[in-house]
Amino acid sequence: MKTILNVIWLVFGGFWLALGYFAAGIICCVLIVTIPWGIASFRIGAYCLWPFGQMVVEKPGGAGVFALLGNVIWLLVAGIWIAIGHVVTAFAMAITIIGIPLAIANLKLIPVSLMPLGKQIVPTNQPFVSTYR
Image (cartoon, rainbow, N blue to C red):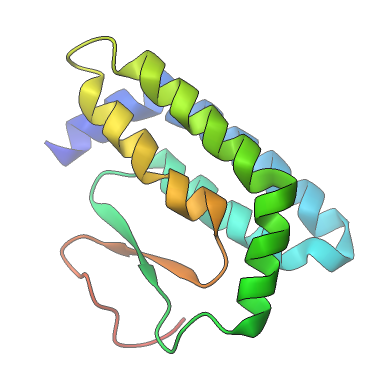
């Protein structure tokens, strides 16, 4: 079932969302100072391509002061706008019955798009990661 939902997600919105995150990641990596946000954007973009069967967890050991500061900057610059985009897209997907799980997956992306630093994406069959990568 996860594979079917992921394919439907990819066709009806996931591909375009991921392209947006990848474009933001490239821009952030070109501007040397914003490389941590670029890496986080690539991570979220990969999650956008195939969200069913994965979940977002806090990194082991906590996020740290720099991740908190970076998340506040991200929230003010881009996070709010991305979250609004996810809400609008989720509303459009929820109009049909088949789109309801897609809308839920879209809403699941909002917390990580608001505060991407200090998060890790893991498979749902492995909710706790023993090592930090």
